[in-house]
Image (tube, rainbow, N blue to C red; front, side, top):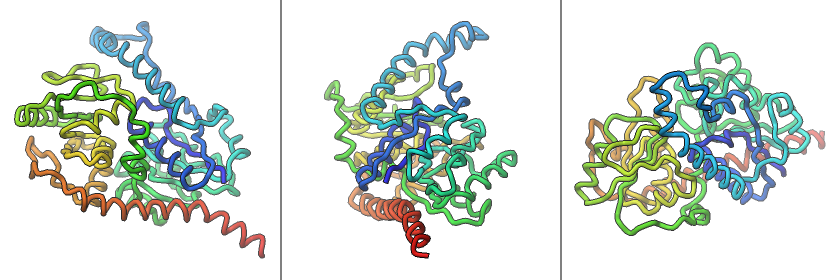
Length: 373
């Protein structure tokens, strides 16, 4: 069967790129032909663009631009190289006006993972509900995320209509299951992020970067800024005599640490694999800490509008809540018992694979019944 994945394939975000790679690999292992649709959503494309110096409107914005422009260029090159080497993109580039033509090439469509149902993020693009897909085709969501705990009133009608037409629904966090139930009365299955469906050895196949030195370090990976994660990392660094390395996207360097702002997906994997500890406010930072069996700590975003649900769902499933940093402290510094964690993870993986297998086959079974009738 030829499958298409629709996700945020061009994001300059390690987690977004690696989850797309992972889902592609999983579906290929299951025996399917698989492509990631090279879809260029105009709203996101504009968001991704690097500003020209002529677009700078204030001295403060100019300083940030000067601090960031060269690092962003290097990062774009690295992400482009990764995509060319590892991602199986469609040969056709699709936009809003021709995405419907992809119906001629694929038997089934899978939307996810990532915040594909966050209409604030994608400019209210209903194509991420697979609205362009013909009714005769199988439409599946895998680990789709809303990115908010409640659908804004302005998006509720379109979200309801989009979800209602899917053949099979799965989401990445418990809040997504609640939203789907309340909005459509349909049951959504909570499944693992695609990155967690591959094991450590499979990730090492693309983790070819060489560790630059043998000095122990603590890795901090930040997406959302949180109150005390940097200071906690410095305290941990003093305790264990380790350098602190911080991967982040801010143009402003973090004080007292080594700043990495142009990290490629493979460099990220290398940094996680070789760290003594990993500290993160990022969902995928936690995912890869678990995959590489690292002792890690996490801190949640305290802003009212946050994406904590996906982290909370994962750590609850794997009984890792005690690794949370609260007010600059954590319940334990003990090493994680990964024997029990990986056992729980394997149980969740089995359920996630089962969802994919049953969802993909659902349309085949329905077609067979129609032929018999």
